[in-house]
Length: 179
Image (cartoon, rainbow, N blue to C red; front, side, top):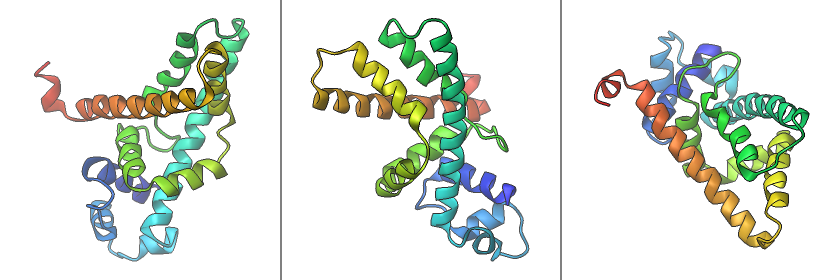
């Protein structure tokens, strides 16, 4: 089960959601029985949802710990204080797999499964992340609510795209020598 999840996340991160079949995933884990994915997850879509839930849960735990540290220092004084808490999640992983594939996986899924992502985000406890966004809003009270929402969406996409590019760089040892 863990190997299937790790292989799926890696392949989707590298190729994209639509370019990866269940057969590709099972070939990656060198499984003799290609129906194991359906046995454990029911479908590729369920597997993707479970991978996203794992990532969201892990990130929420990390944000919560960093949020508590920020509040122990007296809370945020600037937007930068809050953004640093959010962006420090650059080493996203999960408890079972810390390979550099999370942000690229998320980017691919966000681009192709927006409705699924929204449904999952609504069903997972994202209170620490929402609280961080609320802090930004409170630190910038002169910005109208609709403008702030738009800016936060752009910020999230920018962060994900930037971290995805950095993660791809880290994952390719050939690129690292050219810097």
